Length: 269
Length: 105
Image (tube, rainbow over all chains, first blue to last red; front, side, top):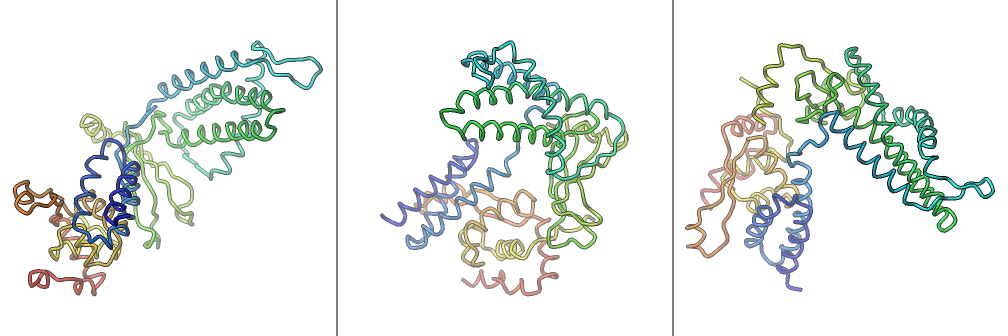
C-alpha cells in the first residue's frame, strides 16, 4: 500500500477517537501537516495522531451531567422504574424451594433485602477506594440522606440483574453470576465515586478540575487535581500520591467572602 | 508579578523551537527529534496554557503555493517569560536551534 494512503487511513481511523464536535477541525489539521511529510516517514508520523486524538478527547470541556442532587435522584428514579418494568416483563425464575417462583410482588421485599446487603458491602467498597475525610459538619445529615436515597434507587437495577442471573443460571452458569456481581460492585462503586465528587455542603457536582503541581517537584508540595463547587462552598484537593503532608483527599471550605467570585463565574458560563 | 509556569524539559524544548522560528508542528518535530504523538498534544497544552497562540495561514498564501494551509504557532508574552525561566533551569536549551540559525536557513 502507498505510504501516504496508509498514513491518511491511519489518521482517518484516529479521528474517531477525537470528540465529534472537534473531529473535522482535528482531521483538517492532521491532513494538512501530513502533506508536508515525506512518504517514507508518513506512517510513523501518523501513529502520533492516535495519541493526539486521545489527548483532545481527554481535555475537551465537559458538560456536567446530573450536577444537581435532585437531577441525579430523578435520573436514578427513572432507571429504577425501567429496571422494575424489565423485571416484570421477565419470566418468573424458579428458586431453590420446590415449585416456588419469584413473582413481581416479591420485588419490593427483594429490593429491601438487597439494600441491607448493599449497606454492608458499601463499607468494603469505600475502604477499597481509599480514605476521604471532609470534616465538614454542615450538610452531614443531607449527605447521609442523599447517599441512602441513591442506594435505595439503584436496588431495582441490582435485583433485575439478580433475576437475570437466576434465569440464565442453568443455561450459562458463570455468565449470570459475573453479570450480577459486576452490576452490584460497579453500581456501588459509582455511588461512592459520585458522592465524593460532590460538594459536601450543597451536594452539587464539583466542576472546573485543574491540575496542581508536578510529579517531579514533590518536596513539601502536593500534586494532583483540584475541583471547585460552582456555588463557592469550597475546593476539593485530590493528591495523586499519598504522603505525610498530603494523604487523603481534602476539602478546603471557603468562607462567604469568596461567593461573589463564583457567582460571576457562573454568570459567565 | 505571578511566577512563570515551570515547564518540563520536553515542553521547554518545544517552546524553544517555536521561539526560534519553527512555527509549524512538523518543523518542531524535526528540530527537537520528538515524535508527533508528543509534539502535537504538547502544542495544544501550551496553547491551552496561553504560552503560545496558533493561527491558520491565510487562504491566498496557500493558494499561491498550491498546498494545504498550515497552522502556525507563535509565543505569547507569558510564553516568553516561561521560556526565559526555563533557559535558566535548563542551560543547554539555548543550544537548540537558536533564532539566528533559523534565519540562516
